[in-house]
Image (tube, rainbow, N blue to C red; front, top):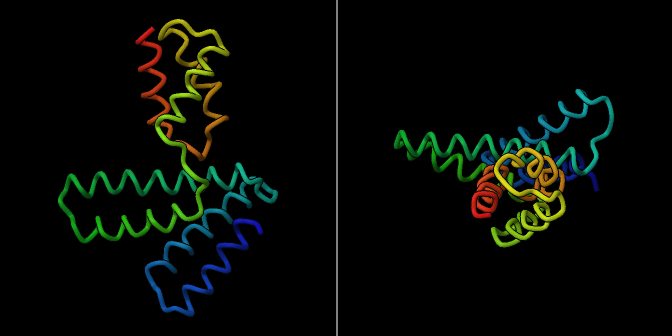
Length: 149
């Protein structure tokens, strides 16, 4: 079942359950996926669909940080619910240990020796972990390993 079909099915279920909060998020996700499909001009591959979901998740995560800084508990609760709904559709996220292993393997593969090779390492890693790990976590892990060498 494609992501768009799954979102439509979940949207109907949320309507029947009269769950307005979930319905709102599922509609937003469905619109984002549909817009990406129109923009690209073809059905989305699983990687492209995961990219859209990752982008939506990241936006909400950034919003959450801003609302926490501002002390807006009403918005914090809403965004946490949205994050939980978006997370259901994302592929299983890599643990920090798994990210570290991918970074180690990639550094060895591209024969990186210093921070000068940072771009080369990131370019090789990101396609491997796209949608499965936060770019910020990957970035920090790569820096840690390259500075530690």
